Length: 281
Image 1 (cartoon, rainbow, N blue to C red):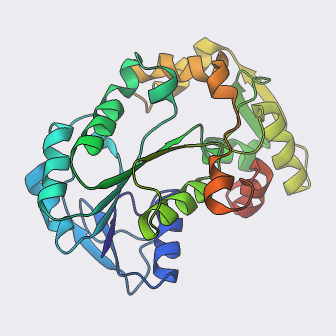
Image 2 (image 1 turned 90 degrees about the vertical axis):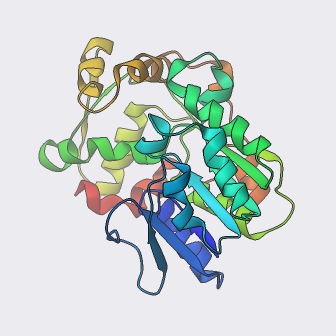
């Protein structure tokens, strides 16, 4: 049994399909009722991922665990060492953890302190582990979907700062390999796209895919801060804007790890946009 947390998110939905397609017995996990988007025929368990006791129902019979930190893990919850101790006690043999590139490039960033704690805990817990450190997600462009649909406009800060955003489907592909195959234990993979691309250029890609003009409006840092404050904790906003506006050299680097694991180049933003175009129509 492979247990998947975050099963209906941008990574999890694709990962479920890949694992089920490989003939694996798969269990999706949620805190409440069986979530929409979990395919028929796949297992499901309700669990509170924030406590070792609440996590245990999801681990019964699990040999491998995909661990994605939702709100109950990333902003609160029990000590990561206790949670990973419960994973080891349940007999889980393999853990794949989704962390963040920022945890390594900005080791003093308070916004990613708990992610760093989870990395340390998963390394110490006992099961074989693989850590995935993606950069920015191509799917962050979903934040523009409503304004593109209604006004054919993208509003974003730092219009000409280009970063190597990664397709979540590639993260899922690497995760599937690490869960299914030997040879990934103890590895840390930095996951990026194959090219750097700015918000202004992403807007041009969306416009071309739609076959219509889409305008780009650059927000000031202050305007972007006010927008992010509607759904992001204050302690995270500054660091996020720093990465978007003043990336470090390591955050601009195009990593070879997606291609090394999957045997093909990482997908560009244009491929993600084509696949998700209905959200912007």
